[in-house]
Image 1 (cartoon, rainbow, N blue to C red):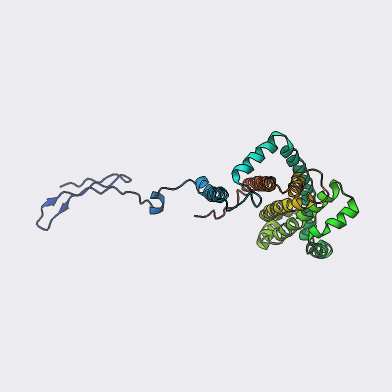
Image 2 (cartoon, rainbow, N blue to C red):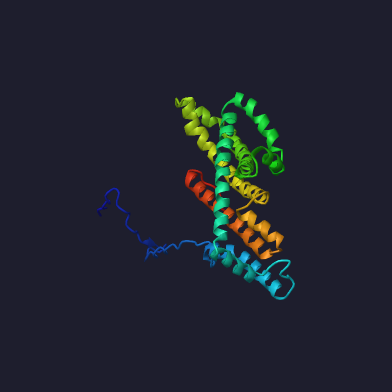
Length: 297
């Protein structure tokens, strides 16, 4: 009896099983494997945008209900319908657009100056020990002073025009950006520095390819904090000797007890702040694609 050998690499033929009595039993086919689907993925997921809007919609509905039943009177807080009507009137006559433009210009100027000053001081203090000895101590002293309390002093120095308003916003932006950029620079792993030196990178090459990319997450966090403080500083500065801007509308509404106009201005402040934060977060996702992070489950 000759035995045929299968060529190497070919699948082995199915060999029928034999019973103890010598009878040949047919082999059963291998059942097909089905992928295991987690129970969490089989559940019907609600769209995230719908979940995120549920809270504000419920709050708005409760507000309207309290206003309609008389629990919230108009002199205490206007109803959402009245606020929407007033917002439409302010948009129609152009006063809201003009105020937003003025406020955005002030924030942009203060944010630009604060970013340049805060980042520059953080680079000097973070990259050089002598810079830290000279710069860090005065900055730490100045940041403990409430910047809002400097408004009267800035008015004496710069007058009552745009300069003190931009200066207050600049001061509010500078310190959080300085702290986060400085912490980001000093938080770079020393092993990465040693690896860069072993590869022959110069000092500028280490700064460009290792230190600055490592400090970028901290810088973006500092920018987000600075944006929030910039809008906070704008609220204070526009209510002191201002003749234009969103804060000026709020001061006028306060004099005439117009809670509806005040709420419209607050909503505009919140909208502009959220819009600026969205832009920074989008920029953060674009610049930090190399850093995988936990996004929640």
